[in-house]
Image 1 (cartoon, rainbow, N blue to C red):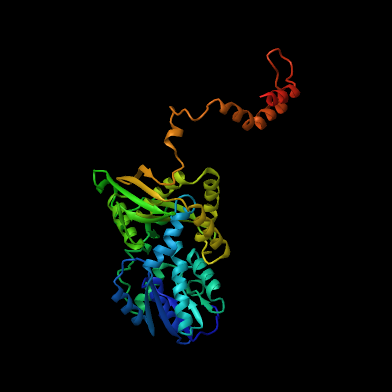
Image 2: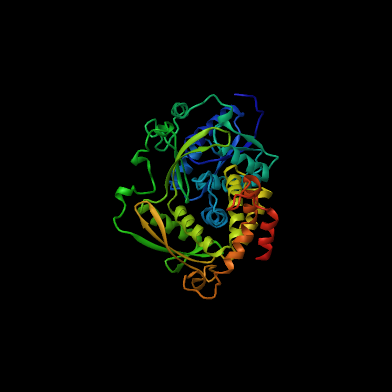
Length: 425
């Protein structure tokens, strides 16, 4: 390893998985036996928390903190992100990316309270998460040293990491050479990478999935749900008001049993390489489907067009770990403002992997049935002629000038007569 100096007290972002399990003894061996504070953030992943704590102390932690951030995660991160409509490269609902700023923030809080002089994480040098954690560190505690073992140790594969753990009799909690998928799990999604997925031609194995049923095993009957929103934020389900955490948990159940939320993508990592991932985001997929419909119902064209343009930038900021930045905070203010009237309900029909919008209502609907109806008499259809003449003026003039148009007698069109014709109308 490179000579990276010493650290007396290191705060480690601890998950209980393979990477962070082997990091603690490695830090002890290579940083002159420092004190290690392990911080685990509960963002909805299903874990045996007693076992995670036992493993942390067995690995060498002097203190272990479990921070239950599920409610904060949903209210302050997930639902604002859904309101913005953030999707990376058109498909990825940012389940891992959105959790990292929160996890890094909790780690920094404890590191400062415990008087640590360094922060450590288990992200690889090829991945996105190293960027997300460390940009959050820079925003919240730029004076603390950062230790990223995957960038400096001699271990260069998951197989070698497993061998390192076995040589030190560390409990891997079910991780083995046969169970080699790398997963990240929270209340929004679960991701699957590595193993057979590294060959992009290989189809995912059905037993790899953890949250959702396959379409073949989903119910043969359509299930309808109604999601209620206030100012772009979900507040109720099927006529019942709910707190944010309970609502998302219920949506996850609806989506999971109806095989909704699976995607298989090859995305562009921050470091430039392409990477294949399979994601399950059941409840989030339902929310996005409903919200996109409701905003079309309640936001005018110009505002919605601008929102869609800014949403792409917002998505890229989250993917890149730039949550604690002026740009993201400024964009959040716009998203809040533009959805001020995105209040109402959306009905979805769930069936074997699909979620179809079948109804919507809002007190602020910009759709007026009497105006849109073909039988409406308040709209003067003759007015459309003048609108089209003005709206198409540039198109018509361009065609006449560039194509040398001629009239029915074969004479060149006189541009003065064209201009006079528009003026007369």
